[in-house]
Length: 120
Image (cartoon, rainbow, N blue to C red; front, side, top):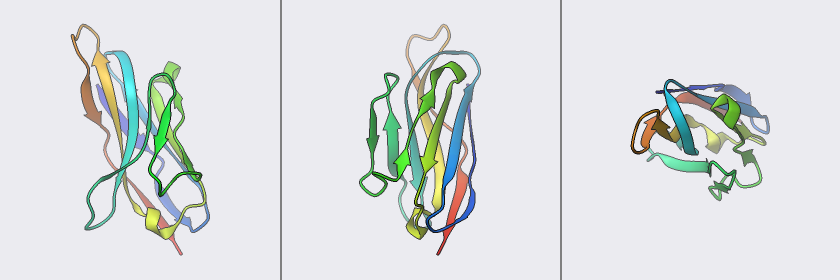
């Protein structure tokens, strides 16, 4: 099983970006999906989560600006980021709790990071 993150880039303050996280491989089910970010010299922080039923939670710093939809048919999660600010600059990582086919339990998977840079 692999998670492939994409969609990062450079954007001006106030702009928007959309990140994607596609899961592939021998997948039975995907439970929660999440996005984390890590800015230079700062610990990794949780940005947003979504359950398999669609319940979402957001860090206070991104509430009202970011959304975390998912397409279960495509095994893909997204992070739609609006009204971006320079403090949103970080490497963004996707994370998912995935049960592989024929596995007894799920496991935690991480995508590679994708850089988001917001210029002022």
